[in-house]
Image (tube, rainbow, N blue to C red):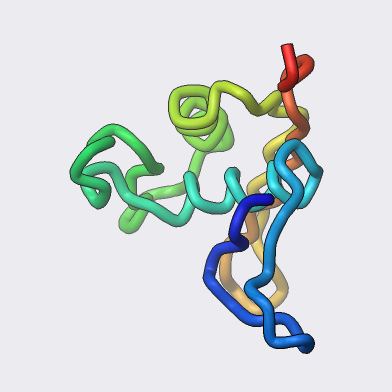
Amino acid sequence: MTLAHPFRLTTAGTAATLTPGSPEHAAQLAGHVVSTQPGQRGLAPAFGLPDPAGGPLDPSQVSAALALCAPDLDIIDVTVAPTPDGHVGVTITVDWAGDLDA
């Protein structure tokens, strides 16, 4: 089992976990990449997605960051579109690339 991030407790009072290789684990890993800016992780300075403030977010930037930081993920689709409230929504569809047990 892998601890869920952010750390939280279940209703039973135990630490929430993810099954390695599950769709939830893949989604959480992709979320970590896009919510981290390069340089925030001292031991992995290239990990993350540069802050797009001041300019548009290009889906190819998201795909490139995922490919670099999470090579075990297969990027199926990245969509960047405005939301009705004036923000920008990013939808990422990923799966695990190949067999993780191999």
